[in-house]
Image (tube, rainbow, N blue to C red; front, side, top):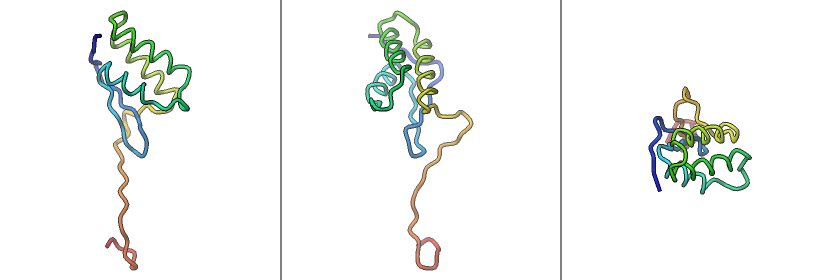
Length: 100
């Protein structure tokens, strides 16, 4: 199996303001395998087939990356390039309303 690197990694939203960077075919394979079946769309199957074809050398890694981006757009998980990483951390408040 061939594990090609993408020219540019794909940033995907994995919930609660966190992102996951997919930079290789192996990363793509693991992500697609772990993706919840209830959230899969038609483009999911195309991304899986493209990943397998790229790992066997039938198509380029960039073609598989394009299939991943298409899937991410249709699933609504593509991280916007202009959006910063947001992390939410709860703060304990005292009775006066200020952080304790």
